[in-house]
Length: 335
Image (cartoon, rainbow, N blue to C red; front, side, top):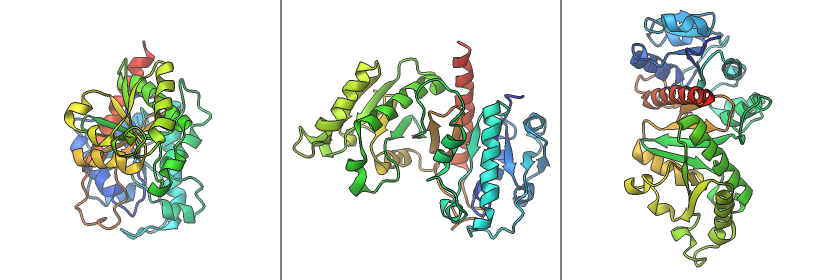
């Protein structure tokens, strides 16, 4: 076994994944962290970079500075750049499964996943809402300490924003929120701050749902009825959590200095500040899994695929963050 490299699943081959992987390797080949791609070697070679087929992770470090290491699992179907195809689904799924298996076995330090498109996967019979839920199912039987996720965290700059609900229509957010969900999300987050980020005494803050955090119940009662009791329960568990606080005052620089992670209640409450701080370099981190997993904070980019204009900033940041988390986990495990 080796702890030397990260695995990177190719994602949807018709999207910008192959292009940004090639660009990420070009940027990191001399400085690292080293990674090995799981996917179709010919598709990656078509990006104009040197590619080296490898037998496994142990072979990747020695070639990384000279050629992109690829565990070649050929697609077997033609690719039309920019066009999703359900025929690609079995390979996309197999690439992810291979990366998860290697991470579980300790053959790689963690898994970085290039973007997938859910629609063609659904057409092929994929039963999971997305990447994260699939990874949780694949690792459900793997032992781990602490509360299990998956919990989605988005990061950019010094901001770590964690989501209680994700792809829920605004009209349904309030009814989807429960004290149990808030408590679970915050508990997983607090434990991840220690294990994955080395923060001994993490400070959390919970965003309010309504304007002015309900203003004493005059602009909505969820803060009084649901959120404040959740914060009290978290504090009783020994978790340092403030709130609920008005969301419009939580994301400026001075406010960010007062917490290590903010628990957000719906998609845009987290994603807007993350993307305002660093639109190109945000990272999606899956908390509460027994393996390290990160991904770029963007999709497949079918509309720009093949044009050579896709930016690799987010993927590069995801690779670096996976490396940092893997290093921190190893250090924490040795204590």
